[in-house]
Length: 463
Image (tube, rainbow, N blue to C red):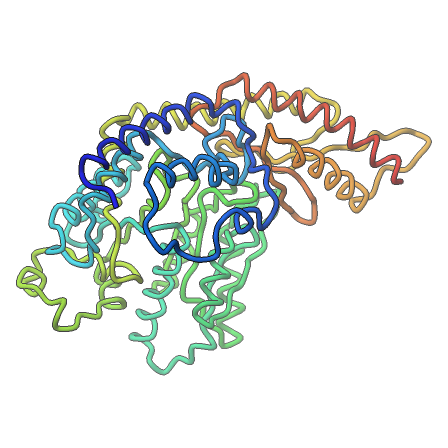
């Protein structure tokens, strides 16, 4: 076990190794080059009987764990969506671990609760949200959830609770969660967890895969006529497959006739970045709807300030009882970068995506499948056509692109993933790592050109 001075020494070494990691990051393979089960072969099958020297433990992190890490901060990581990790956030996480508390009420650590309310108000102003979404309004407010999935599930629980209170005669099996065919799987998973139905409303390329008001109106009328009750819509600003944006203004007009329909907007990608993982902001217009659904307060959790209603107890704004001191890293990052720093980071990612889209359009080998949005470009490889042969079918093009993606995925120097849009197998390219530069975008284009040539050769051989 470390004493304080041993911790000081180990801490110095850890910071040095973290710095060395970032200096050497671009030289590492993007994706972990290990096989499933690699770690179990390297570790003992039980806890050591006596404690080991900490230096040996720290060295094993470098020797055993790091080879199995996929480097999401790598400048050639273009998969999924960016998961930021700033040095400010790293230091904040260290401090938060030092003064750890379960955070289930204000008294646990008043600074943790109050900093969360304040920084979420700062972020609400940063995004231009209405004042009602701020804790200072005493009506709504923000809470830091671990992930966007937690935010969605919390919203669905609160929406169901509200609807059931207003209509206790309603059978739960008649309740429906609305999303679209582009909505993140968090919507369907929330339905699965809660034993409810999920309906994915159709969206099309003509509308850039965003939900239109008329589509929502027709679905509401159909389901109401069939005795079904849509009680929440999960709208999205920045869907996973194509970064589509639902038409929020049209949705707003439609729901005026359905005031009991809860609207939850998932903006996990198009919201913010730069704050280390497990920092998903959730804002509500009416905090009472959360606390009415989630407040369970046994005697041992009661405090004078809570009973007086003068403080926020965040356990009643989330599904779990406790929470980490996540507001600290948000505070550190917001102060260090400032508004201009956030703007610069977002604009850089969008500019790099525009550069990539330009190169794809200039190429004769590829086509863009969905309208580029924010920093996401969805594209696929085309098969050359000739007058002597019919154009390839969708199934053939999908087969070609699976071959193409398989070749790209086998490389250690880049990471992209696939998606399916209206039956089209395609690749997603999304820059956003803080250390990605234009040269990494150009290198990716050259790599795709090279592997496209190889994939076409392989595909023709198979055909």
